[in-house]
Length: 528
Image (cartoon, rainbow, N blue to C red):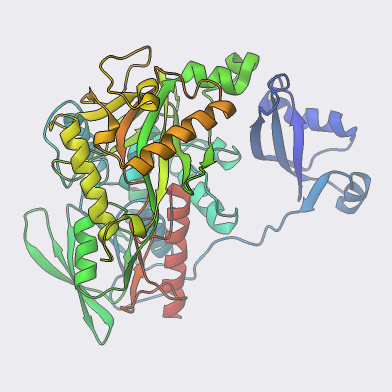
């Protein structure tokens, strides 16, 4: 098998015609023994020449001759032996996974395939019940602190765009994640798209199918079961205390715990600090969601080709003279801004798209990096407490009813109150309260965001359009803490594996899922 990269292809060429197109471009008259698309990207750097860039895995009869003939192209041999797989093994006490987000789910698949029959504890509810709770909250009902955008089957990713890009390298771990998602019902194009996404509507089905697979392999899910305490002897885990859906506390014996709790399990963070886990504050980022008409983003990114392509996205960064950095994060084409609070009397925003990405607006987080020096204290959980302060200010500015504070970009740049909307209608429900975000965010964050908006407008024309809307506050871009773990991925309590985004080792669906696989791998290695 040979891999050939960076093949330029016109937008008019259909997927089914790619094998013949490549033959024609190479003037190759042999037969493809196999042909597989491994990458499809859109090159829109020149608006007069927007095109696809493909990568292919191809099988040919004489590889050496092919390599010699096309030595000027980017061609390499494919290593087909590097596949993620754990050996079958036995254990006296079943391993426990806390959290059913991407890290917990993929760790669950890996341990179940190894024959270890993991128990997965999820403080929230199954997807169908969780969706009802979330929709009720978005329509003005009460917030359920245990079943919301952050907590429940699939984790925070269930209510997102389902983006699968990450800064980590593509390898056997990323391949395993993508294959499991496709097997569970995700579109097959995530296997080759340069910017793959699943969409919240499909993700809701995928996470349930992953549960069915784990259960078929002997694993067990316990919903509405919350980790309350960890019991150790001689710095080794021996059991955990769990509170069930009836509020009853029980003890579950285990010597192996994968802690995949997500970035919003603040009460669990406090428990982990109390029992003596080594925790340190880490940098993260805060800001607001910026919302434009999707048609504006399409025209700016694709020019005259906008009608030929789907909803356009963007990703930008800015380094300010004040030493701060701002960047766009979790961009949701054709999506909506959502209420993502998990604690009462606090407002949190996030973004979400369905697979079709066909809603009127585009949105992204516009964030400014912050460090422990900004948090106003030295406690390991100070970043978490600082997040809460921002979310409480947003709750007050929004009217104390979970409406979010919002400001038009034109007014934001002038530091003046907003009192009416323009062409962009905010998608956040239950609603927004127009105000000045200066009542929520610190001056240095506001200053950096203003400079960033103007700079980014030079890269994406229309980004600073006055009618665009900023909705706050986006405070949970990543975990505010990192839990120490050694080279075996265990914490200061042996047998406990801090994992994924909540533990400070991932940022997004793909990297969290990969970390889950790696923790499962290390756990199995310790059993050998």
